[in-house]
Image 1 (cartoon, one colour):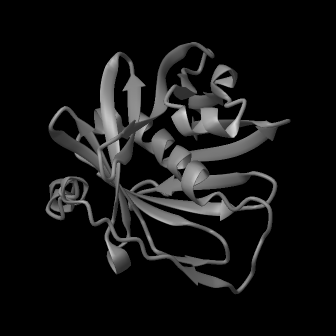
Image 2 (spheres, one colour; image 1 turned 60 degrees about the horizontal axis):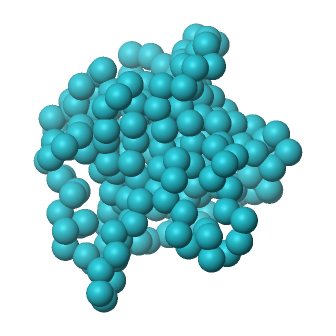
Length: 211
């Protein structure tokens, strides 16, 4: 399945809509702030599907601690408010240059996501289950009016809820622009991944498998 994700508001929080040619309102999502904490929610037909809540125990108490933080940043909650997973930030250190990735635990299954910058082609979150690529989130490098757009490629619909929630998390952690609205603006950001073992996580043929 291929899903379009569009940010439709970007001031004091944000809202998103997910759509396909057959369903222009597949999901909606929102990011809201409660004091210093962030709540991210995914809805279908105005009913809650999944949500993310910040793990307050992992808020770093100093800059040095923040450099070492690899705990669960967000808890994934089901519609009843029960924890059913988590998202954490991981780093792999090497003598010269390491790399980072996100780990997702959802319903006891473990996934990892690597960020691959492909310049003008866009930025891709490549989500793996073991050695199998199960989804890609493509961010368009050009942003109009402070509103981000994405395409989500999912090979198996059983991953759809989790991947769509994770897409909103990615926007929040890498592209949040909730403090101002901008009309008739255009910005372009081109990222290039040079590390071969990360760049190889991107498979351009995967998109065809999702049609």
